[in-house]
Amino acid sequence: MPKFTADAVDRSGRRVSRTIDAGSEAEATAALQRDGLTVNSVRAAGGKGGGARKRSQGTIFTFDKTKAPARVSGGDLAIFTRQFATMIGAGIPVLECMDVLAQQAEDPGFKRTLNEVIEDIRGGRDLSSSLAEYPKVFDNIYINMIKAGEASGQLETILVRLAEYMEASVKLKREIKSAMVYPCISLTMIFLVTGFLMIFIIPKFAQIFIQLDVPLPAPTRAVLWASEFMVAWWWIILLSLLGLFIAFKIWKSTESGGYILDKLTLKVPVFGPLFQKVALSRFARTFSTLISSGVPMLGALDIVGSTSGNRVIEETVTNCKDSVRSGEPLSKPLADSPIFPPMVTRMIAIGERSGALEQLLEKISEFYDEQVSAAVEGLTSMIEPIMIAIMGVLVGGIVISVFLPIVKIQQMLSKRK
Image 1 (cartoon, helix red, strand yellow):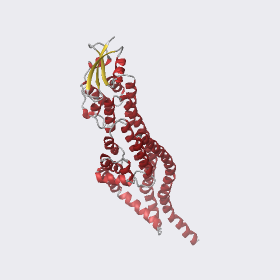
Image 2 (tube, one colour):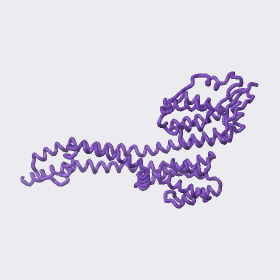
Image 3 (cartoon, rainbow, N blue to C red):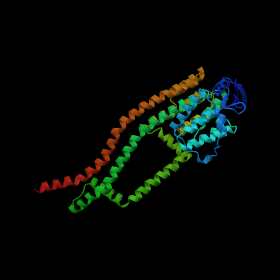
Image 4 (cartoon, rainbow, N blue to C red):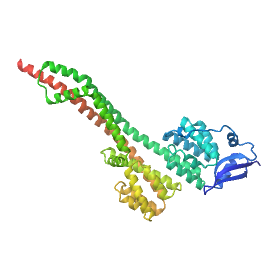
């Protein structure tokens, strides 16, 4: 029977080299995985055969890591992770999996990143530390879960959980975007129509009113003044809006500004409850995924706060760490926060007592995912009449103010007759 030499990682994270008798590379990989090893590469002993060996003799890629993409879309990364899990489950070594996935990657930057990761693995590094070189592509959750999978010898299981987590996150983001796109486009169109009327249409009516020399109602005078200002100082208006936008972005990027904004976001009418449900869903899903993957409680809390997408929740979770470190249950400090509803804290308390915390956290995430979907549908039906009302007030108000003098002139003419 042929002999194969394998490069693998044991449960403690130590690199090991094994020689094993097997009928093929896939059989050798499967046998090593049954022993609790995470296989990086397998090649025929003596240098004969083995796809991994042939590839290692090919061209050595040297890529500038600064050229790695700033980010990869969540959908692309979810697909990559799902395919990675499938190939690992089929008994294909890690190095071969990465090689195939790099070849089929469509994004050039992502392809460069994967090829660089492959060279790091060939150079003796494990998968998690190689991926950690690209924090803008693979975040803390990804790295820590891969590390947990390597340490436990359950990389396939961890990758499946990670793929499910990412697919659920992508679906949630898609729902939120669909809820926000319609009002943003509608408001933009309303302001563009209003600006067109004020800059190009109202000045023509102003000339007519000046020639008629009639007293104008207060609403008409206000609209004419606003139109005259916009025509004369449009560039000041644009610069002011641009300056406000830049100032807002700078203020938002500060720690205090971002905290205040996140706090206000949770209290905004209509959208506030939606944002809270989204943050709670992220918190529960991320926490459940990390705990079920073997990440320690304190390590999971370090990660889960920053991924909630809200600094208020992040602060609450950070404060919980001291309580957990001192031996208190997690549910106690969470119950003191107004951000976490009683239902969430009680389920977490039950999970801690029963030893099924990750399952109950997953149930919480599923519950809030359904709540978000229902809220998005409700918002979609609610936003349409709101946008119609806004358009009616702005455009309708301009039209009425223009026709008021005309009505008044007709009344004066009828009295003269």
